[in-house]
Image (cartoon, rainbow, N blue to C red):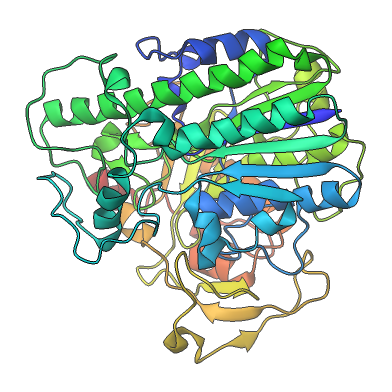
Length: 509
C-alpha cells in the first residue's frame, strides 16, 4: 500500500468549486471531488503553521500547552513511526519554516526530504545593498518583505517558482517509486499562503478594475482599504489558487497514468484558511478564529473502500490524519494520539466525536459541535496566568530570549510527556482575546458569523464540551484559571461570560 498527502498552506475552503467557489478557476479540485470523498465538517485545531504540523505528526492538540515550536523529545511522530515500521517516508516541500529554529525537528523524522527555496521571506538570495522594492500598499515593510522582493528576482518563470519545483519533486518520486510498495509521500506546498505571487497567465483568469499600487501581501490588521482594493486582493489570491489547482492536476494525471488509484491513498488538505476582507479583517492570528480560517477543505481517496464523489458530515480534524495513515499501513498507533482513524468515516460517515477544539496559544479557546461555535476569551484583561510547557524553547526564527528564561520552573509531567517534566516558562502571546470578548455563533441561522448570541443554556452546554476536551487533552491548570473555568468541571453562573463580555464583543466586531 502507498499513500500521498498534498498539504497546502492557507487553502480557503470557500474559494474551491466543490465548496461553493464557482467563480474560481479550479477544475482539478472539481475533478478531485469526483474521485474522492469530500468532508464538509473538517476543522483546523492548533494554529498557525508549525502548531498544525506538530498535530499532523503527533495526532494530538498543541495549542493548550505551547505556541509555535519544534517537535518535543517525547512526541510521537507519525512519519517516524511509519519509517520505523518499514514504510518509506519522503517529504518534498517549500515550506521554509521547517528550516528555521522553530521548526527544525520535523523534516528529520522522514527517511528523506527535499526543500525548494524562495517562498515568502525565506533567507535565500543575498543582496547586501538590495534594489528598492516597488511602491506597495503593504504597511509592514519589514526585512522579511524586503527579502521576498530579492527572492522574486530569481523566479522569472513559472518553473522557477518553488511551488513548481516542489510538485516536480513529488512527481519525480511518484514516477521513480510507483512500482515499489510501502511508502508515504508528503507533498507540502506553502502556497497559496501570502504573498500571492504568481505568473500573469493565472492573473489573467480574473480580470478586474484596479490601477493602484502593487498589493499582494496583506498586513495582519483591520481592513482600511476601499472595496476595489479588497477585490483586487481576492483576485490575487484566486490567481495563486489556480496555480495550485494546475499542479494538483499533474498529480492526478500521474495517478491516472500509473494506475495508482488501485492501491494508493490520497489526502488533500490544509492547515487553516485566511481572511480576505471578511469581518473587516485581513489574514489571521489577531482576530477571533472565524470559520473562514478554521473550517477547512478535506478530500480523501481510500483504495480499500473506493468511495468517490460522496460527501461526509462527521467532525474531523488534522489530529485524525496521523491515526488514519498508521491504520492504513497496519501500524499500531501510540496511546497518546487523540485523533481517530477515518476509515469508517470515509466508508459510511461513521461519527467520530461530538465536538472539536481549536485555537492558538494564549488566544480564545474555541469549541464547535458543527452547529454552534463557542469562543471562550480570558476572564480578565491580563490574560494570565499563561505558560509555555516545552523542552524546546524556540520561537519562529530564534531561541527564547535570555530574559524569558530567567524564571524557569519544572512542571510536573503531563499524561503525554512519557514521564518527562517540561519547562514552565511565562508566555508572551501574539494577542489578547479579552478585548474581543467571548462569542457564541449559531452556524445554522448565521453561517457568516455576523450576529453573536447570548444564551445561557447553550453556553453551559458548550462549556461542558470545552471542559471535556480540555480534560482529555490534560490541559494545564493555568488555562482553566486564565479562562475562568472550573478545573473540577462543576459549572455555575459565575463561569458564564457571554453576557458579561457582550458589549466588548459587539464593539470589537
